[in-house]
Length: 404
Image (cartoon, rainbow, N blue to C red; front, side, top):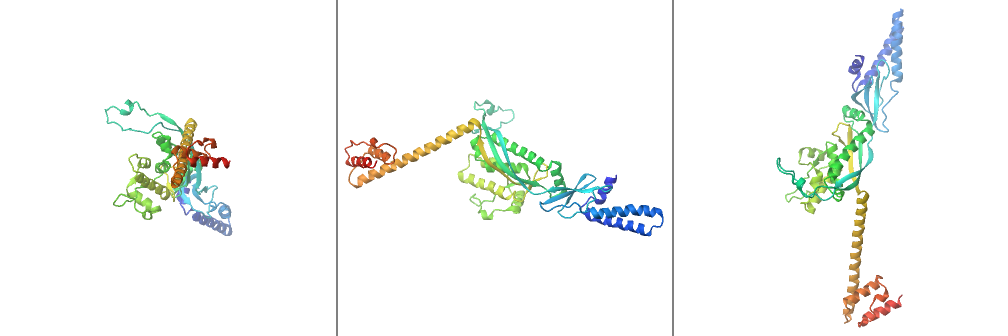
């Protein structure tokens, strides 16, 4: 009952001023009792009252809410956190009997964290037709010989920025009740991981690699109350100029009322899209990640967090899948180098043939290519056919021999 009385009297943002005023009153009452008291009872009453008032005034500002690092505080009465946010300032408290009015100080700086999810299973091959059949009809996906199989594991890396949501006392209390920053991190990363897994299981690892921004946006709307706005388009269906796109608060307000993108991954990862349309949709997602979260967006899971950034920064294959990917990449790179080398050799041979033609002579293509290879040190000098009837080829052979 005493706790309820204290909460009723001091459970508000003006508690500091009310407590200080009470301390002065107690001191005045105690002083009057001491000065005017002739008999014992007034003295017995005045001494403890005055002493309590003096003690409150002496220690009332012992604990303040610091501004560096930035902090807020929740008012506590008899150990119970109230949904009352106290700002950075000197706050009069009385965290002792009979008041037990104190503070729970909470740093409010936003922090950056990295995450890494390993062993994320992907699909073996591109999804062709996963249409859900009507009720009572056979499921073609179960009848198909091309059943979905795991395509190996990937590691997904990312980062995010988060801080306590102190917009209301209730939100700040949620932050503390969920374990502060450590507890919030664990819960958020569980949510992020579930979002990544649900996307990866429906796609090959190569497809996931190209979905970093849409996947970041999907995690953002899954975690927060942010909405992705479909940006306005002109009469030809093209996005309006970027300098006319809504920003910050204007973007968030428009996203509340306008047409929204509900699934950013499906919105971008659509095989029927042209390259131009896919690029436009990617721009809409990137703009959301830039504008919607910049000032912080509240979570929707009741953990008291405010998120200002979510970003998938890398997708990497694991184990044999990684070895196969690297081997494929090396093969493609080697093939590219070989093609470039061949093209260069042909160009050099073509120059020799043109030079011969300019002087009224001809060089067979095979001889020109061989001489180009020697000229570019792709073959030994002896590779040139010195027995050729063409005098220009013979001369070239002599020149190359003389320069060795």
